[in-house]
Image 1: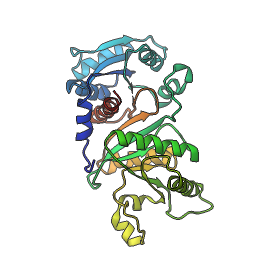
Image 2: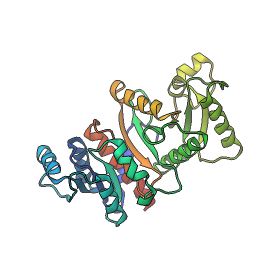
Image 3: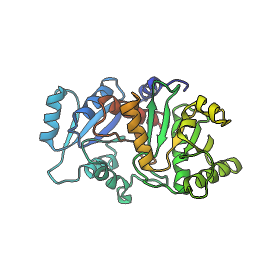
Image 4: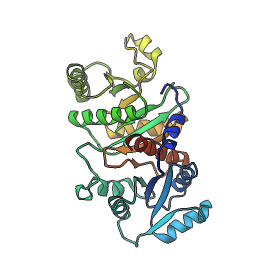
Length: 304
């Protein structure tokens, strides 16, 4: 995938042999409904709206979608909406879970609860795909929502999740950067030591189908010219496919900065569960919701 457009992901979503049944927990968010109904119009999803009926119907009325096709599953005031959505999926009535108008913590806690049986032996990882005008291809970054301060073993699992996801999307051997403040190993910066350890392990006994580089600073990841000026000789500079953030804070700030200041288009999915989970910010545009559902559908299209 050598361009910075989401077109190929949307095309992969449309190749699915079925409409993915999307269960939206807290489906009274106007922006999320707008993106979800666009995905439905394009034929790769059907919608199950979970939450308080009056709030959902008000949002549908305001967005003009009240007469469209959907299934509404009502929850009572005080009922755990995410739990109700997960129970639908566990009964075989849904293929994708989507966060609606619910705070991230309230959405993630039921998802992380082992008794809900959505977890696997993989680490749950939130991966964002980014399209920026000044970068030649789509760029993945993770984790930006779930694991706050990943240790070296968790970073290894995040790498594996990102690479597997990119492989599904058509990247044969993605180039993955281990982001740090600096590109030299420093004894007082633990993330640089962990990056060196991961790169060494990948070279000696590969644990993911990728090229792994790190530690490496932000400017060197994104710019060949920065690498030239700093005398950093690595052909991946300015051509990386994915970034592993040293912390959730770093990853989240980078994505929000790209969105607000670099005119970036994004979409996000939690992988590592039994089903893909569309997780976007409640302030994101409808396009982000639409693209996140395309991302989920593309993953399922490959797995079906």
